[in-house]
Structure formats: structure tokens, C-alpha cells
Length: 268
Image (cartoon, rainbow, N blue to C red; front, side, top):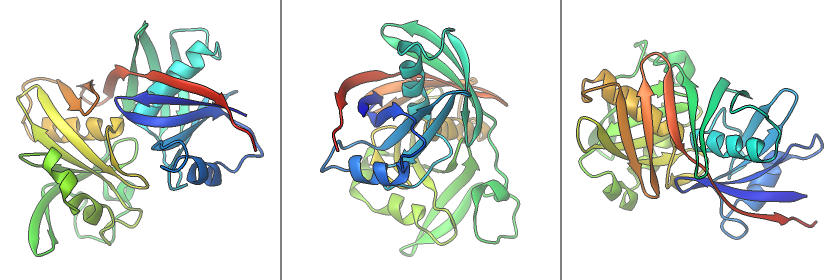
């Protein structure tokens, strides 16, 4: 079996061709850990129709991965699985349309779908509200104001003065595992730099702290825009190892790179 390591702004993955008999949940749990290839997740490339199958490093299936879809796009283009610079990819979050803007260095735009604030998409415990917008949650006797939405997967957005400082705290983990979220939640700490720039750090369910989260950046953009924090329908989101450009209104677009790190044959 040939496996490949790709990364998108530091968010890294094992990428491999789909095989019917492989248990990808078990495979991700075994090979994505720090004692093996130290990746955030696994992408299986299925064809006819073209589909991205994504698993977090703990073996849990996720509907979509924003940085992963760009890595998927580079893989299928360079392996001649697709012949056009524009193509569609099936995911559990719906169809994602891709356009490759540059081949070297690789840069593409993904149509990430429509944000959804509705409670039923968030898998939260019963609540009297139809949405969770600027809701106060008590954690360790402190008030945390958060907004939740489905943007490719379940996301929570928390605005902070210093996103990087959250890495030394356990607030992200506690929000992720809060009993309100029956299926857990990705937690995005958003630091506004200007009306067109932000810095985001994400605690990802099934992974922990990640260097980047594409769907999380889209969620951060949507919430910031809906709160009136942005001067136009476009933002540059800075991450630890790169930046993404997020645009759109009803349909959200994400633009960013994908990098190939290595390929090798896996034995056993």
C-alpha cells in the first residue's frame, strides 16, 4: 500500500487510494498518532464518483475537512484522476466544488457550502432556542460567550483577545466535551486583527489542538461577518503555517494551498 503525507497550512494528513476491504477508522487510529506518522487525520480517495472519505486521528469519521479537501484536490489532479481544473467532490457534508487556480505552487478555491445555525445540525442537548448565538456557557465558574453553527461540520466560535494564549489553557477541550454537545464540537478561538484580518486557533474534536482548520476558518468568517466585525465579504485568516482567504455570503469560498511532504510504501 502506497501512502502519502500532505499538509494544508500545517494541518497534515495521510492520503491514500480507497480500498473496500480496509477499516479506515482502525487505520487512522493506528497510523495517524505521534508514535507513527503524526498526522491530524486520514483521507481515503474514492473514485466513480469522486469522494473524499475523512477520518480524524482518533478513528472517528468527520463529514468534511477544509484543509483536507485542498490536499485531496492536489492529489487527484496530480495523479490524473481528474482531467479538468474544475471538478466536484462528494463528502458527507455535501458536494464540494473545486477550482485549481495555480498548479505550482498549488493553490485552489473550494466552495464550502452554506452555513447553518439551526439546532438540529449542531446535535446539541435540548434547548429552548432555535440557535446558539452569543450564548453564555459557565465553565469553571467563568462565563464564556459562544456562537455555534454547522459549516461543513459542527463548529463553535469564541472571540478572544489572544488566540495563541488559549493553547496553554484547557478551555477548548472543556467546550468540545461539554455535555451540551452530544457529538462534541470543534472550538475556534478567533482574534480579530482588523476589519479584513483575523487569527484563528482551533481545538478540533477527535484531534485536539491543530495548526489549522479550514472549516473552522470558514465558521469564524461567517460569525465575524454576521456580527458586523468585517468591512467586506472577505477576510484573510492567519494560521501558524500560512493563511487562508475566505469569502462569500450564502455560499462560502475558501482559498488556500496544499503541500506534498512525502510518499512511501507501507508494509504489513
